[in-house]
Image (cartoon, rainbow, N blue to C red; front, side, top):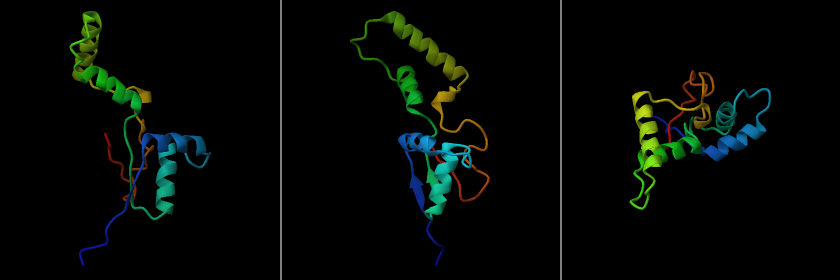
Length: 118
């Protein structure tokens, strides 16, 4: 027998938002609360989205070509400029990510690994 299978628990952005409401002093962040609760339930790993709906909306605006019915060339030019600026120096705004600093996801242990879900 090669080894036991690992179990992962999948969470959505809404789950993270709900955890932020329940977070107390012992849980420094909603993500750490989710990890702790998952481990208590016997899961080996967690799978969480790394970006928020705000990022997905900004990505759609920058990366999806507007329909032919859009005649606002000034707006299109502005969006094109924003997209090119982001491509030159890609970065996220604080409200666009679920983990914003080291330690938010407790990645130091083998049991807590986070994966991106787009």
